[in-house]
Amino acid sequence: MPSEDDAQARGRSQYALVSAIGIDAEALVDFASRVWPDRPPYERILVSWWRYAAPGCAAAVIHQSTGIMVGLCAGRPSEWVVAGQPYPAVSICDFFVDAEHEGKLLGRRLLRHFEAPGRLLNALSISEIAAAYLGRMGWRGPYASSLMVMPLPRIARIFHCRMVRHAGLDLADYAIAGGKIPETLRADLDRIEAASAQDAPAHMRRGASEWSWRMSIYPDHTYRFCLAYRDAQPLGYVVVRAMTPGRSRQIGRLRGALMTDLVALHDDPTTLRMLGARAVAMAAELGATLALFVTTAPSHRRALAAIGFVSPDFPVLGRALARRAPTYMWLPRGPGAGLAAENMTMTFADSAVDLDL
Image (cartoon, rainbow, N blue to C red; front, side, top):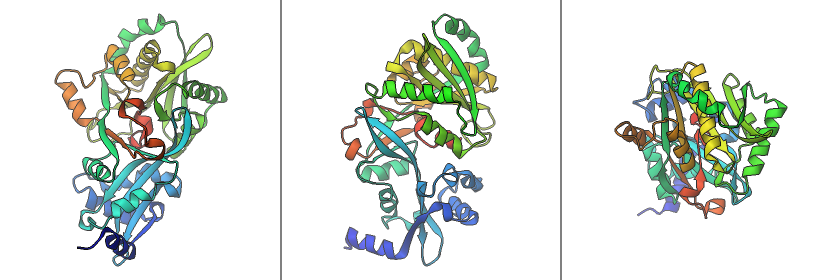
């Protein structure tokens, strides 16, 4: 029986690993039609986030004898804080291999392209097939996140107005596009991250630089921030944006809003509830019929459920949400070796979901 080393050697001679940025549009659409036969229009791949990022963010596999693209893996760069220490990280987002070229260890080759000493590899929102493959490669998981929904935000916000006024917090709103973040907001985002770094669960570092990078991918996206203060000290923030029409098959023609992120120092429940209520109001202002949020943090889940978000615990509808909730995994090596599922905070901000939708 051929050894794994033999398979790897043949794979290297028959297949080339290249930056996906250099693949032309026709080849990308052809690849999408083969790996997503039930998910037209295939031209959606042409607006994938990694096409607007640095070349190292996505790798492709080319079958050398035919010249066709047969594999893709995209990795969203970030920095994570684990036990108070920062580490470079990559979140695997798009991971596909043409079924006709399986068994060649191409998936392993793509994933190892993103491995590096001292780097944390993780994933949020990947397919069941990809999750099974990662599990065979030693990744931990998959673990279920919580998908939460606020139906009809324009009605729900009526009940939140009084609560926000009596919370004893000062709120400040910003609408940001094109990556141009005002200096006051930049400073407060960095202050919140610095204050939370030491005692917060393992999490992606969410400072001004991270938000600037995200906004540079699609400069036409407008992000709405709301920051909470007490005695002029920033305590946390929530970020909302309108979903791009036609990008989500699940909500169809409905107008949706994503709560991209929700952060409160020490996971303070009052701050989380007030920011959640303000997010509902912002979704209403965007004309959304649904506001969506994904989290792995029980504190987020409790706070949002308390203000009316439908959670996976909700009868009937909750089961449907649970089936659609993204799963998360990580490679338990280097900075990921000591991590546990209950000690990681991930939201839409940690994956390409925010960018893709």
